Structures are given as structure tokens and as C-alpha cells.
Length: 195
Image (cartoon, rainbow, N blue to C red; front, side, top):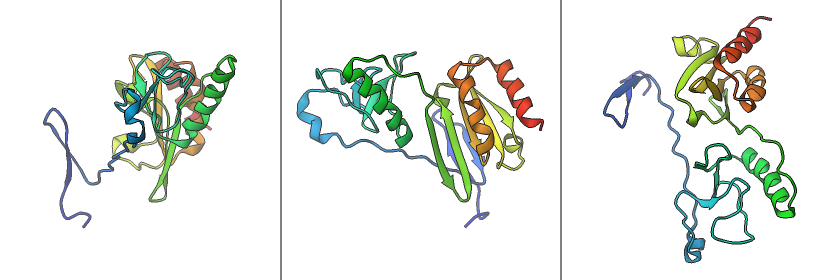
């Protein structure tokens, strides 16, 4: 029952974080047994280059939850597990198949509605080393609704998460594409906050 006892998360380093509520994302693992005889490395999905071409199979592309695409900037493989990303990948694959120039880069986007609160994430928060509150009061113990946080790698914006703030979060798409510096992102956050 809520309030009966504290909830905690134990991190890999053994430290313990106490909380009233913990939201857990368990994710998924693609079922690739049907590809077991191909000789492909299926560690964390079907390995692809940045255009979706399957590494080790000529003339084959993969997209969606099963495809582990190489990030065009970092080369690190990542599976994007949301239908919005699959739609973006389809455009990249179609152009690669016909030999056309790749479409402009897009910003990964996912969302979920949880207990009446829309949670949205754009960009690649997993690449961030620090988190900064851009809107709202959620990180300071205030209401989570209306909170927007930015994820930064060094001084560049790499991801944004919004909690009940749909009218704010999409304004960060262009800064994400341009890997905006922290000062530029703070200026945008201030402009959004003032009507």
C-alpha cells in the first residue's frame, strides 16, 4: 500500500536511493531465434549500419525494435524501441535501397501516458552526463507536472524529457538537432517561461 514503507533503488555501485514512488522501465528483448542460422551477431538486435543495412547480409536492411543501428555520430549501436522511430527509419531505409541521399536527421521521440501524465522524451538522454531542470519545479521537490529537464553531454544538449509539459517540449527539437550549447538552451528555457 502507498505510504506503508519507503521504496528504494540500489545502484550498481551499491548506493541506495530512497523514494516514495519508483517507476521502472523493463524494456524488451527482440525474439530473433528465427535468424539463429544466419551466422549474424544478434547481440542486442540485428546489427546495422547508420542506414539500416544489415552487417553480414548483402542487400538486406532492418528497422524497428529488432534493429540495432549504428549512430551516425558516435558509431555506437542502439535500438530505438518506439513506432515513431521505426517510421523515421523507414524513410532512411527506402532512400538507401534506391540509392538516394539520406533524409535530414530526425530527433528520436517517445512518449507514454501514465496516470494522467504525458511523459515525453526527445533526443538521446542516454548520451547525457548531466541533467538540468529547464521548466517546472519537479527536481526541486515541487509538482512534477510541467517539469522539463535537459540532458547534456559536456556542454551540448543531447536529450529532453517532459512531464505533463507537451506545449514546451517540442520547442527543444531544433536545439537538439543543432546540439545547442547549455547557455543557448538556458536562454530558450527562460524565453519559454516568460509569456
